[in-house]
Amino acid sequence: MASDRSTSTSFWKSGHSPTLLAAFLYFDMAFMVWVLLGPLAPIISKELGLDPAQKGMMVAIPTLAGAVIRLINGLLVDRIGPKLTGTISQVIVIAGLAVAWHFGISSYEGTLALGVILGFAGASFAVSLPLASRWYPPEHQGKAMGIAGMGNSGTVFASLFAALLAKAYGWTNVFGFALIPLIAVFVFYLVAAKDSPDQPAPKPLSAYASVLKEADAWWFMLFYFVTFGGFVGLSSSLPTFYADSFGVTPVIAGYCTAAAVFMGSLLRPMGGALADRFGGIRTLTVVYVVAAVLLAVIAMVATSGIAVAVTLFVAVIGTLGVGNGAVFQLVPQRFRKEIGVMTGLVGFGGGVGGFYLASSLGAIKKATGSASLGFMIFAALAIVALAGLTAVKSRWRTTWGAALSGARI
Image 1 (cartoon, one colour):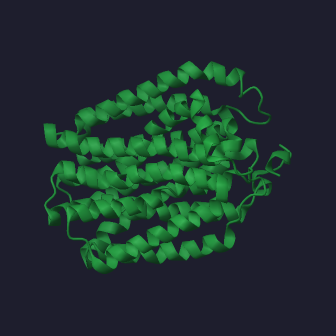
Image 2: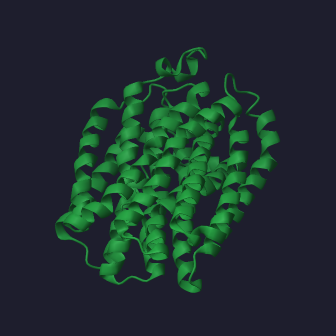
Image 3: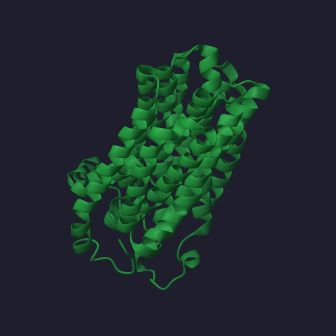
C-alpha cells in the first residue's frame, strides 16, 4: 500500500513507473488535441468569417467543456478507477476527431460542437493525476504529480504542428493526423497503466457533496483557477493574439506560442519539486506575486513588439507552470482519500479560469480594440489568489499540515 511505504524509499522505487509514464503520455496526447482549435483559430476564423468574440469563444469552449467533464471524471475515478475512466473518455475523443476529419466542419456552430467533444480530452487531467498519485507516498507527491502533469506539454505539439499541417493539407485534415499519435499512445496506456492497490472503496455519490462543504476545496479551486486557467487560457489565445497584433502567419504564431507553452510544461514538475523542498505555500506565494507583475506589464507593453511579447509570455506561462505543480503538491496532502473527486473539482476551477481568460480576451478585444484590459483583470485575480493563500496558510500549517509525516506544505 502506498501509505505503508517508508519515507526513505527513493522516488523511482516508491511507485509504479510504467503507470507514471502511461499517465504522462495519455495526458500529453489528450492535451494536444484539447487545444487544437487554438493554433487553427487564425485559419478557421478567416475561412468562416468569425469576429474576435467568436474566435475567443471557439477556442474557449473546449476549456469550458473540459472543466465540466472533469467533475464527472472525478466521480468516476473514485468509483470505477482511473484507468477505465480514461479509456471511456479517450474512445469518445478518438471517435469525435474521426467524424470531424471524415465529414469536415463548415460552420461556426460545427467548431463549437467539436469543442465540446474535445472537452473530453481536457478532462484527462482528472484521470492521469490520480492514476499516478495513488502509487506514490506523500513525500513524493510533488514529483509524481509534476511528471504526470507535465503532460500539458501536449499543447506544444499542437502549437508547433497544427498550423503547419493545416497549411500543407487543409485544416480539417489536421484532425486525421492527430489520430495517429493519439491512438498509438492509447494502445500503450491500455497495456502499461495499472490502477494502484491503494484505491479507496467506492462511495455513494452523496458522499462527494461533503467535499464541497470543506472551505479548503474552494480555496484550491481558486488557486488553480489562476495558475492553470492562465496557462491554458493563454495557450489557446496566443496564436490569435500574435496573428492579430503583429500580422504574422499562423505558423509563426504557433511557433511563438509553443515557446511559452513549452516553458510552462517544462517548469510544472519543477514546481512540484520546489514545493516538496520548500513547501507548496511558499512556492505559490512567489508564483502569484511574479505572475501578477508580469501580467500587468503585458497589459501595458505586449503589443510594442513581437520579441517583447514572446519574452513576457514565456516568463508568465513558465511562472504559472510552476504554480500548477505547486497546487498539486498540496491537494493530495489535504485530500488523499478524495483525490479523484478533488482532481475533478480543482481541475474544474482551472478549466473555468481558462475559459474565462480565453473568452474575455476575445470579447474585450471586440469591445475596446485591445486585449490589454483582459490581462490586467487577470493580474488582479492573481492578487486575489495571493490574498486567499495568505489568509489560510497559518491554519493549514497548524492543522492538517502538522499531521503529515515526511512532507512539507
